[in-house]
Amino acid sequence: MSVKLGVPSKGRLMDKTFDWFGARGITLARTGSDREYAGAVEGIDGIELVLLSAGEIPRELAAGRIHLGVTGTDLVREKLGGWERQVEELAPLGFGQADLVIAVPAFWVDVDTLDDLDAAAAAFRAKHGFRMRIATKYHRLVREFLRDQGVADYQLVDSQGATEGTVKNETAEAIADITSSGDTLRANHLKILADGLVLKSQATLFRSRMAPCDKTDRKVMARLLERLQVN
Image (tube, rainbow, N blue to C red):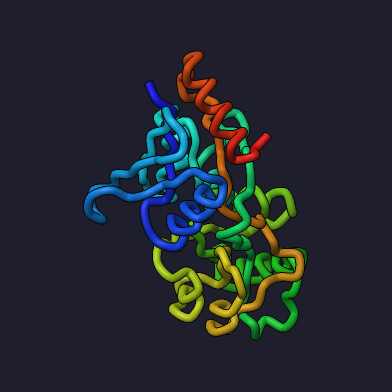
């Protein structure tokens, strides 16, 4: 057995994760070609590096196939119902920050808050005969947020492409999406509701509550977390 550590397999998240571990004396590296998703760990024994897409890591943690994983808080909370029972949040890593927000067309001058959105949704349904569409990739998080805020008379529509473009393309009236600067939203003539912050997300180290751990694994994990200065 070895302790399996899942990290993003490409891009800025992978590079930043490698840098974060490296700054703490543990070197993570890809081995082989870019398509092989194989990796190596130096600086500590008993750790196996598993390269995965950031979106796969929550499910692998929940399934107990990896012991530790680096991914966004937004992905864990969206993909895992009752996420606290399946994973433990160990440490925010200080990069990959993004906000999940509700945004509406900038020309909706009377819609600045969630209460305004609720009123607009009721008026939209009365006028058009169907519910206002909110395009998003984050159905669980957005549905729970809007329910808690008392917003009704909407429907979520799936967006796996450029969510910001759905309003312009007339496939949705509003959106819920991740943004780091808000520039793309403004470029698409959208504005964030004043109280429309659903979740602040960043890259975070998680521990699986489901992965089998023998005595040796627990010692290896304790040694690793001590090196990483994670309590």
